[in-house]
Length: 450
Ligand SMILES: [Zn+2]
Image (cartoon, rainbow, N blue to C red; front, side):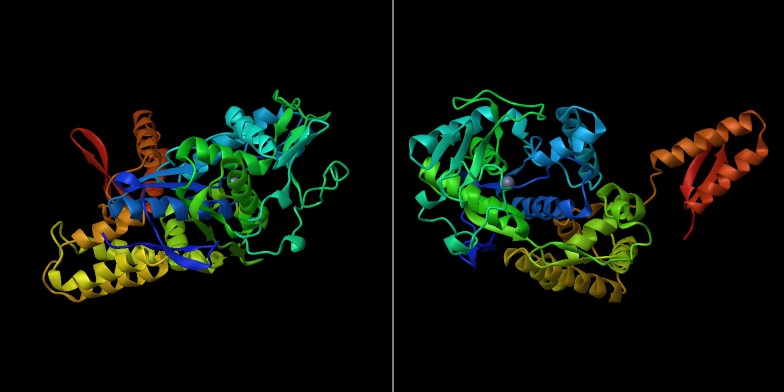
């Protein structure tokens, strides 16, 4: 394994990843606030950091990936109120949807997915340390972070202190010593149906403090990589960094990695934008292979165009890999094709450039397609495994649950001599690429010839 360099927002440079003892690498990536179904844009950091974990494990590191779930937040109160449901119930439902929707990406779960509501003790402990050290103050049950107490404030997002606005609403403005200060704890207000007891009064945590507290609980202070969308660099990550710096006297993370945003191309989705960009809707439409391929096709740091055309291109790349895989044999790959495999991993080691890595992967496939003798697939297995696309190599000959259910219904239709229904189901299976073969042990499904 060679050195791995990643772009660090704080220094503005590529920095070498320095793992902890035993090759340990902790990654904390900010997850969703669960007030509605997740957007395909929320899936980008989920995919980027899940794939980064796969790559680092391939390089021999022992990775712990933490992705939090924000389940206490103004947005959740605001969404629950008109629905007439308790905010905790809405948050639990949307968190379950988030787990199912991201689960359908089939990239595995993060190693830990802490909930803010279950991390209150750690949050209270960190706020108490900040008050004790003079970097926070309680006013009427609220607690605010004293931004000007932190000489390093602004060093992550590279902003001058007087050019910053916390974007918090005006409520609380009269209680803050300085408009720059931000809330660590918010006193309970009428209309909010969750609150916890704290030394400075009943209330609930601010958004920024929960990440500092959960990250330190699960990864310790000074862990290797903190990630998230670049829209979070300021104020969220600036505030996370400040809280830990002042509360614990140490930097929260060594490298701050930020992924770019999705650019939705209006009007090209073919249906109303609201539903078309929900993660579950996109997965239903195009399947996980094309979506994972689309994310891998762009450099994580740049903006990513998201429209039907890009999805179709990603689907075509998936098909090219599947087509090539059918011609390969399970064996070591030829030595004289290894340069492409090495270029793939070199691209990932230089700021996790999955886009360039895919270029090398397709060079490998072009070369394999050119050869007359059978080519061993080992290199391709290794490369696709890191991208979470190793399934493209599997013979696509196992029927899914839906197909098996159709087969059961056909059997029932034939049992009741409803031949028309049985034929209709046979046609439906044929449209899905399956041929029904009636044998002595009953009917079975075989892949139709392409
Ligand atoms: Zn966060």
